[in-house]
Length: 573
Image 1: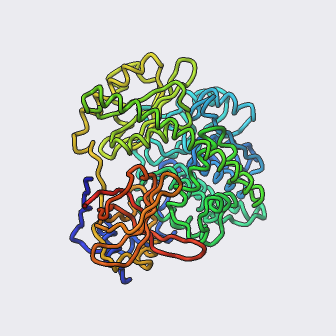
Image 2: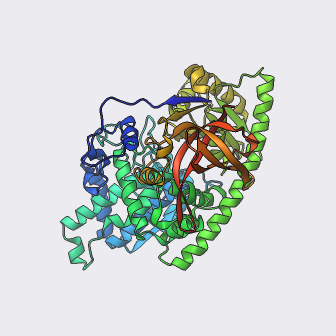
Image 3: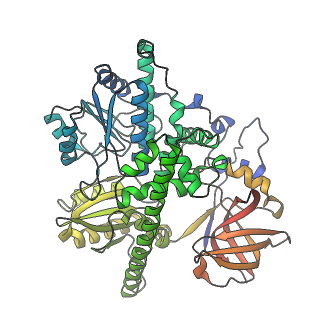
């Protein structure tokens, strides 16, 4: 087990508050140098003025609103797309729009984004404006079809653009060329939040709300949606995103959130008043995503839209059922993938390629992204998993390691091998792509070679980054509570991880795959509980172990106790 100690800059965190020494160390190692960076008040949000074309977007929306026109939201079939769609609908309705509808492409029929086929479906609703959320920056053909149909398109997106931008009426995307917005990591829901904030400001400035006898909406009402979509999409939690997420979490803890979010949290056994970012990422997000993966994201959107708690509870239960089915499908696919990689490992004399590319025609198209992530985690390599997309096409989902920008790698492959890829798009750590089935073997070879040329052996070894050691006295409920609410933690602002030696006092398997442990520190006899998720296959542990772990709080029947969440185990006896 390779453990990398997180470097600790010399510069201490300047704070007027008395920070716990462990938290001071954690913050400093993540580049925090002043108390300002720990201030998550809305007043510290980056101003929208630097977001390119925001005024034009607000003006376009205002024109359609004043004409009592029809708005059509075209979203994506993941959690970010669902929260973006719901926020746009609720905001426009609160501003006075009478005709707002949405359309989410079914991934199995239409694929991703504003395709020409989706536009043909959209124009049947006679919209005066199509608004894309969490997609559109690569939809050149779709926007051209909309233009030809006489329907303008407002693109709001956060994905990386290609060489050419769609001929949309307006594009708002912090990652488009010459955009000066300092944070390039807004999720799709963050982008549409800024767009709606600009529209509200414009409407308030010209007296729209007074003339129409409407109260000025409070944008903070939708920050629970912003927090959920941002966390679930795994965008880096830079300072601006941390403000958006923390403000949303505070609303949820206060009980001022969408009934659907509350129902999903309760169904997952999470305390509404103690919710943190990881609860959104591991409890709410997967259940919403299950709708888009297996059936249609419309169920997830309706769950978030409804004001009726009973209706939200019923839809949350259906989403939970879909998520359980998704887990069963995922487990079967993972077993098949691991078996194939074990055979490859033997055939290649123990040397797996630097990039892993897998395909089976029976694999479920909606689950390949999760499988790619699992393979990446287990083998410490970028992974692309394909499923049958119909009509001779394969749909693929890629997940990468920090040392490799996967979208840029796909771009290079496409440039060097003309015609090999049909389409692709995404981020540094995740991407989607499609290609013809007869091109699979050629693509796999090109991907393995390209990944091998960029990744050295160190990048392919599994490792854990640690924030150091905790003393026995620091394994306390007090510190666990402080860490839990000291974030929000997430992508790019990692939750603290520590490593230490322990004695195993008791161990048992729970839930078939998890190890429940009772431990003592090496220099202390105080008992502390721990759980190692999905590590039951390690078998009986020795008396002494070295653990990589997080210090968390376990709540059971109202009793709060410190608990270690074990990420890795190494024998020391």
